[in-house]
Length: 378
Image (tube, rainbow, N blue to C red; front, side, top):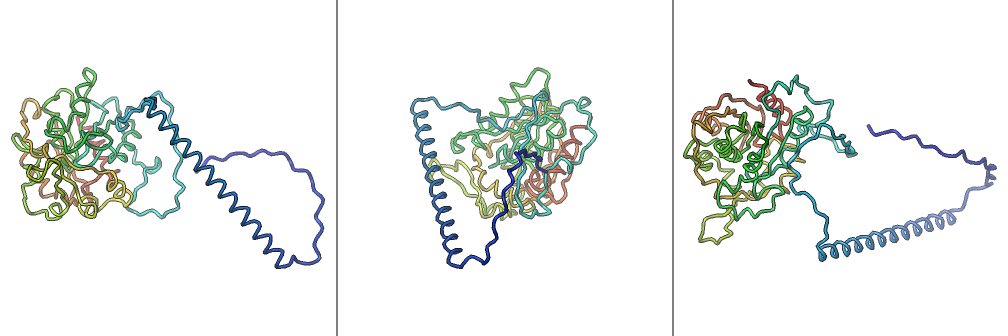
């Protein structure tokens, strides 16, 4: 509901009643009056358009001058890193005035619709989630999960891996896994002494968090693999997710290999056919999220997918792992997910019913509930 505003005005002076005309105005008089109104309105619109054009031109000139003088205002590109301040005043954003009928599969994240769970944050080992996106995605894909977790009082950081989301690096120049996940490892390295986080990795982000688990075992409380690659020691992401070679025709049709170094060299990245995105990744997701992904996804760096991981029991193996299955997944089918689970058994397996490969879009509330439950496991 919008805010109600009281409008105060002086009482208008009483006017003498107008004399009633003895006959209706002629058709010609009405026509002249209507023509005059249209002409006046047209002149006003033309004047408004001219003013807008002048303002836009002035803004462009001012921007160019700042650019040439090197005086453009600085801004923080890493808007995906969120650190809610408990003491800061909450800003209320205006709600959409759209009258479009909403689909039943298009969940609203309104406060009165959230499933509030009894969570005592002080009793948790950590209340800080670090969300790591999958191939082609960025931190933007977690927007519903971020909203729900923060609503519950959790601290959330969504990472843009190198060449993903708002990270400006060229995906085709990424040559190894350590380079790809550097934003994640840098973040973990800079955590305060004694602080721990829960890592959540989606898709090939599962390999990214596995790499980080080997480097920073003391800083990670739990690791959650969400429809994700979960390689064993000595496996690459490609090894882990291609155990059923030839069984996923849709994925093979959607893949577009890019050769930035020339056709005589290995591919540098992998793109996805936008016309197949809905069937492959978002077969259960709302249309608006499919539209968001279609304009936001970037190519997947190829070299990190082929790199074999070195994972040890004292480090990687010391961290509690959880796997969340997505039964309606067309990108990493649930049979392949179960194969990875059997080969590298986690502490617990949970299932998101009717979830596609993007459960942060298709089942945001159910995903939230599972993440909260995992945070509560002692």
